[in-house]
Image (cartoon, rainbow, N blue to C red; front, side, top):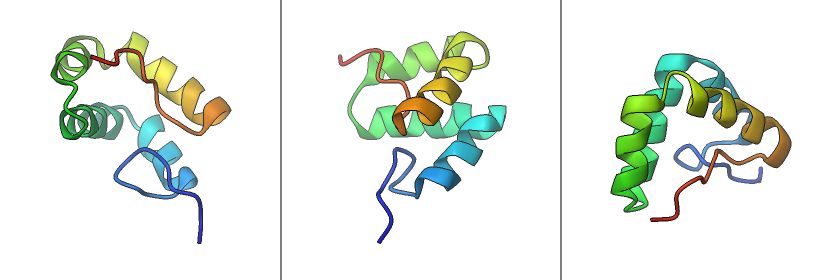
Length: 73
């Protein structure tokens, strides 16, 4: 079975595709942070999700096969 990635336990390639599309990256990022109990990180993604964090998510997904874990609050 394929290694699980960040977006809802989906495979890495599906998570990468979702991270590349701005709207799905923003929505999935907010939902996964809320599921992790990281409300502050979810709020930051709401306000900065379409610029800095979106680019960082793409880079981290390609390099680390994991989306950005900036705030562990």
